[in-house]
Length: 400
Ligand SMILES: Cc1ncc(COP(=O)(O)O)c(C=O)c1O
Image (cartoon, rainbow, N blue to C red):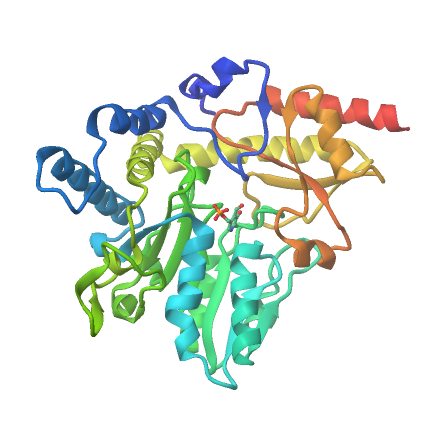
């Protein structure tokens, strides 16, 4: 178990009693990340890629260093595989609009799964509607595991993309991405991985995995809001056309027309989120200092403990029981509305999420309209789980 890392996170100095169990929504930021962001404003603030003076050159250099750092973090040596975006949602929408939209023909299909976050579902649904193609949706079993044979049967030689998450933000299911990638590639379909929930503590080596696209957000990995990443494999970089037009993405502009830079520079029109990128770089340093393996072990231990404790409470029903679970547990308590559960826990300063977690099709599949959700990170400890269970017991007594 990792001890004392809570001290790295200033939010807990401000709120010492806070028991934060909502890291799947957003993680808190360590001091080093906050410092990196502030330092940029105080000492280095300047626009990038435009100035020839020292301040601007320095900012450009630091911004581009983070691009290479991100590339290496995901197993690529080529910084140009990495575009900075606003987050997972924007990254996925770019693949939908800038890559896929122009190559869809009647009879094609896109394959995704029922366990996706809306960010990895609606963009495909919209494309399917607009281009009159089929959106094929792989189901999960009652444990919340993908039914692999059924997923496999949906992929064929007209599949233009297979898009799935590594970790479900509602069930906590960890998908066997090696297997899923292989199934897609056997039929020559490119793969997009939504790594929003896994990038923090799963090794994602894009070269070994041979992924075509990967998306993640800074704020779920101790970085700032408003910064995310789209990875695109070498062989598809030339296929991504600009989706947003403006400064910073051009080779030349005349009154007769415009020619554009190559990926990733054709994605970053306008002034980018420079301090966000530097904060993301600092978050990667922080994660690498601790090590993904340690983070995974810590979160795994807490989750296992919490599942065991919840199983003792007959009134608590967990959504799914996946073979391989990450640090996320969705649950309901008797007939109590999840918003009431979360409000009750809040009085003990326990922060959990309540609602549909942007996975409405999945919740409908399980016959629920909402759940409460606890999710863990490195600043949590067993005592946080104990506090959650104690408060749930009081809730059950109170409601009886
Ligand atoms: C699995 C998954 N995909 C996509 C997203 C969307 O991420 P963002 O809101 O940072 O764009 C989330 C956010 O919760 C998520 O959990």
